[in-house]
Amino acid sequence: MITAVIWAVVFAGVLLTVLLPGPGRFVSPEYSIWRLISAIIILPGFLVNAWLGGRSKRGKERGEMDERDAAVSRRAAQVTLFATTIAVFLAALFLYEGYYVAGAVPAGWLWLMAYGTVAFMSFVHAAAALVIDVTGATDA
Image (cartoon, rainbow, N blue to C red; front, top):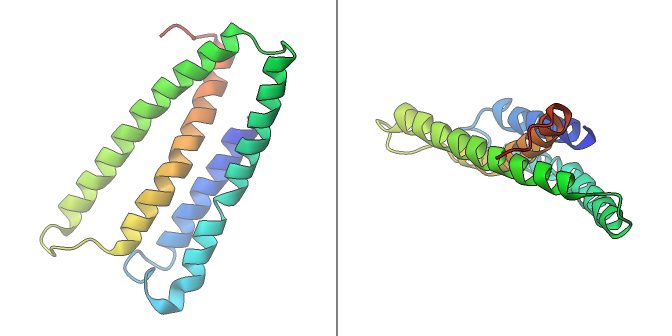
């Protein structure tokens, strides 16, 4: 739950830091602080993942985690791969359709795709693990 909430906030922050100045202006020198903010805003998600990863490792060593936890993680990884692949495909398709006449995509969109993909993937994995754990749907 903690990870899902944090990655949702990170994802929203990355979206806002690129979309507020606009993807075309995002790469200009006067918006360099926005690029820095969007790069830094992803850090809390990675710190929480590292902290929870350490807790999970200690939990496995102490026998607090069992094969069901591993099954939930595997199923969440499957959902994450599928959802992220579809999201990146659709984003690339929409960018192509939106900018093929111009012959170039504003670099801000590429920045958003790079950082957004990481945040989206992390959010989907955490949310999928939570839903799968609550519903008990670990069968692949």
